[in-house]
Amino acid sequence: MFSKGKLCTRQIALFSVLVAVSIAVQLTKTFLFVEFTSLIIFSTGVVFGSLLGAFLGGLVMFVNGFLSPWGLAGLNMPFQMLGMGIMGAVGGLYRMKNNNKIGFYAETAILGAFLTLVYYLITNAGFAFQLAFVLSQIPLLEALVLTQIWGAVFTVLYTVSNTFLFGIGAVPLVNTMQKLLGGGKKCQ
Amino acid sequence: MSINRRTFAFVALALLVWAFCATLVAGYYYYSYSDLYAKTRSPVIHVNLGLNYGNGTVQWFNETEARSGDTLLDVTKHVARANYTDYGYGSLVNSINDMNNTSSEAWIWWIWNQQFGWSQGPVASDKYVLGNNETVYWHYQDISTWPYSSPP
Image (cartoon, rainbow over all chains, first blue to last red; front, side):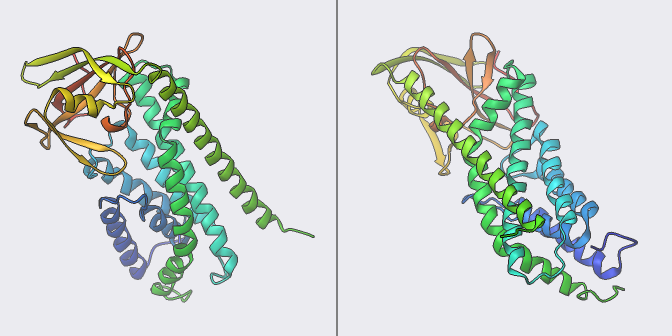
């Protein structure tokens, strides 16, 4: 939405805050299969465009790869960066022009489910590569199937939770960000 | 009744997600059931459990008798003093025989496979149901670098 041309001061300030918030949220331990990082990154993509959305997604998972409370992400980090980068990039491709229409709540819920599923399919595939080439000698195809099955519970639970989270939170969050940026007025 | 392309695309996307999730859950239950069935056919099983303290001391508890359905954590508690924290979706072993995890060293578990050698445990130790004649190994090791080194 704001990806063309240089960013104005207000946009830079908001984007900086979003970087800090995303990293802080991602590095906070949560236990109830609820995570807010995807929602923030997707919404950032909607407001700032695919490039900055993807950049933020990649950056957050890069930092997370080293500082995560669950330990080093190791070889899975590039896959996490890719998955979260897609989350932000798709946000930039999503067109939400009249942000108060009820249909957008349903659409963002479906997009949240889809993008979370894609994220976990990618990161599980990342673990499959580690399993096949680093942790054991299991053939890659077998490792890909096994890791998707082992990770199925996490994948489905996070997909369900993000369906609700995106459905409830994406439209208000995008609206709030746009208001902070002046609500369509020329940014300075 | 006409349906516009955008609505159609989102309905299709929702069905795709549903299909994927249903397939994953079906696969997970099929795998879990097959695995559990294979491991619990006899009431008593025997497993080989190794404890490597990372200081040159290795203890082996070969042919340890366990009940069918016991997890690795059950058997570990049977042969050693294990302190752990239950996080709901898996327990983290904090110490074995008073050897505590630190920020750079921790207890990591491995499983032996005749074909593939040592593989790092795929789930938490309280979620892994042991099978008859399986060989598992707790290794107190450096976790500051990735990948973790497999047992000797």
